[in-house]
Image (cartoon, rainbow, N blue to C red; front, side, top):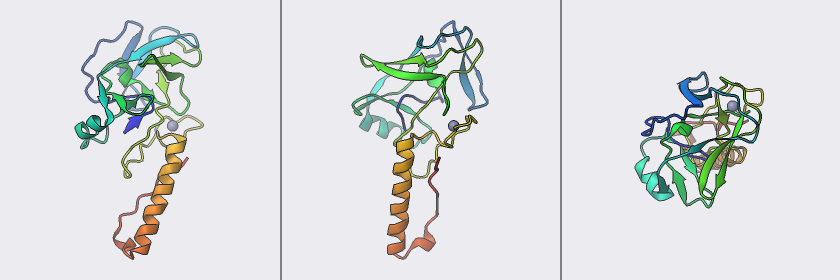
Length: 185
Ligand SMILES: [Zn+2]
């Protein structure tokens, strides 16, 4: 599954945490990344680091691991397999950060003033997940869309789901199909 901007939380191989950040338990999802200092809107916070892989290669590597997030780079041919502290930043539908690709590097930037001790978040805008994976969101913000997929991806998945159901109905084997509903906002 590809984040419009992000990676795997399971086993970061580079645990160096910059002095202004700290990793600790999060109510959003297991571990999150928090700031120890106040941050002004527009400030750069940390780079999203990790090896760059061709999309095809990444698909082969992580075929069996649906919980892997990879950060999709502009152009769609490469992803970053995040290994640094930025890979711990959780998704929120009402985030305080955004990601920005600058000269091929992914930078996490504050989109509003952030107070000391706040958890950092950005919108993953996931795409390319498996049909079964609803990528449920637990951010609990007022505008939570219920899923970490992007708005466009949710529309695409709903359409694909409808087409699968239609096909199954035509083939007359819908009774045997396990039904899964696409997550909608
Ligand atoms: Zn949410």
